[in-house]
Image (cartoon, rainbow, N blue to C red; front, top):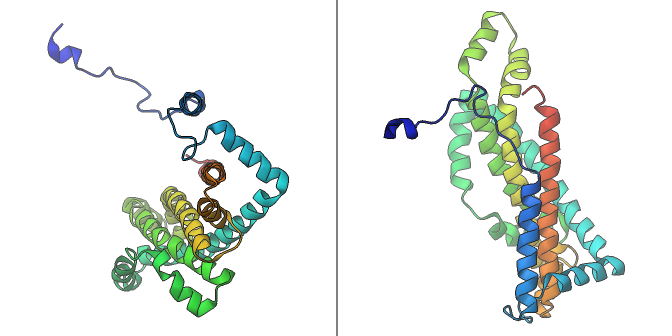
Length: 264
């Protein structure tokens, strides 16, 4: 057999079909945690700075029994949900306008491009001066951080809707409203939902940073307090909690995609 024939990729009639191996991530987590536990038990990792997973699990259990864990989670979730909803509604609205209307694109694109790179957590002191040190300043920080990536993803998704579909709808005499809701919105929805995945991660990062600067409750405040007191097991427990919260948000978005994009 010639070298060219050996390197030829076999034809698959079904094309590329994305799939998952449900057991793979669980196996990876188990291997990582087992290696971590073994390294801790063999004293390869210093117990003062890197406690074993069993100690982290005990710290999580103690926090759950004490009731503090639920209070911190609820405080963070309240801020995340409020800021994410406000930022997403504003971002999707402006992104759609920029994708459809020339004037909105001409005005909005340079402004978004100029303000997007600014670290939003750097504006928290300014928001504290404007809104006070309570919840509004933290929600505003999260909403602003969510707003910009949502604008970019919504604008890009609308702009990438195939123009031939829009022209076809116009040739059939559909009104502008029907074209937006029957053609542009379904075509842009995958890109918008992908942007939601990014913005939800940004919201999680910003809520932790905001709580570290000015909050008594919340996962960020809990992690900061544990670090100041050198309670490393509780600190890592807080980090694990953030990871689990991120996985939960990702699972919710995956479920939403299956419902909204069932036509795919």
